[in-house]
Length: 175
Image 1 (cartoon, rainbow, N blue to C red):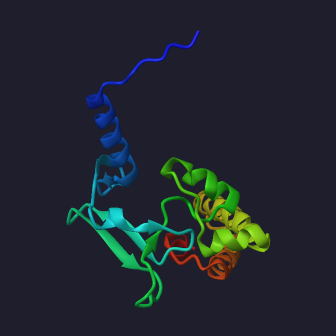
Image 2: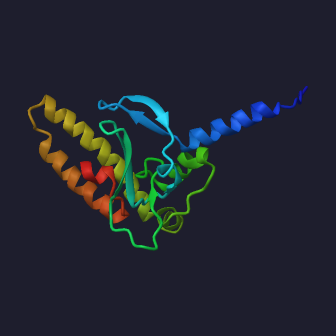
Image 3: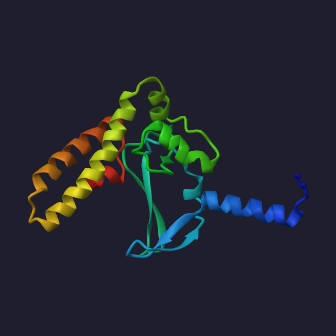
């Protein structure tokens, strides 16, 4: 038997505020990358999502500020966008990752992926290459750099794939 009960207004309001906070909050990390808390940054919280962002944002623990950096040329009439998720995944996975945010992404990459699977194929390869490069880095450290030529080839291919997808954020900087 289903029991229906009403939730007091104060509880509804608290849940609403907590929901808004969780969607708009950013992690605060120390210099070692360990999460130390959450905060709302009024300007950064207003930046919308795109799977092909034009800014990268990160927390700078040294100066205690959220930093927003352009990662490509932004025209005067263009909206400033960041990514809320790992934007290297294929469109269907990105849409799943965005479900908690309560919207369906309609950026150029998601719209193109519906019509052309080449983008998703490239993005799946990007995920593979990121994984392979990490493995090669570990292997290189253990086996005196024998895996380095393979890692460099993978990094070069990764950079080309990221460029083809218009992804110019942290993945490209570390390729």
